[in-house]
Image (tube, rainbow, N blue to C red; front, top):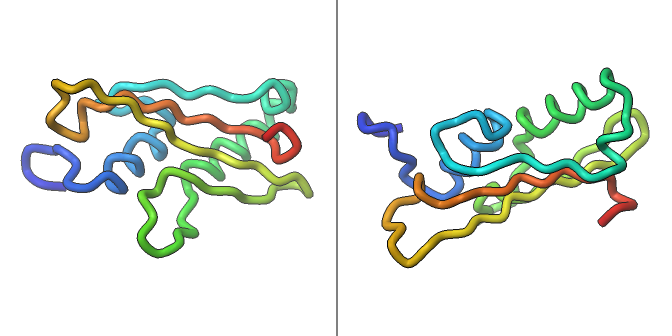
Length: 105
């Protein structure tokens, strides 16, 4: 990242937010579906690890959506972002990272 720590691209900002599960300087929150919430702690840990380590990008991707398999289950995640007219920088956008089981989407 640049010296001022401001993300230089949407993909870079989304990666920072996703890798930290919302515990970065970027505003936002993480939401899990009811199916993910009902998983065992051990499996939820694997799912969160899968989200933070995801790196199977398609070309020209803003790093805002992905899916992966764990223990014969498919999980999907996506980042929605919201910005106000006054927001001039990517690090001001509010992000919502949603994680769900395939059958819930």
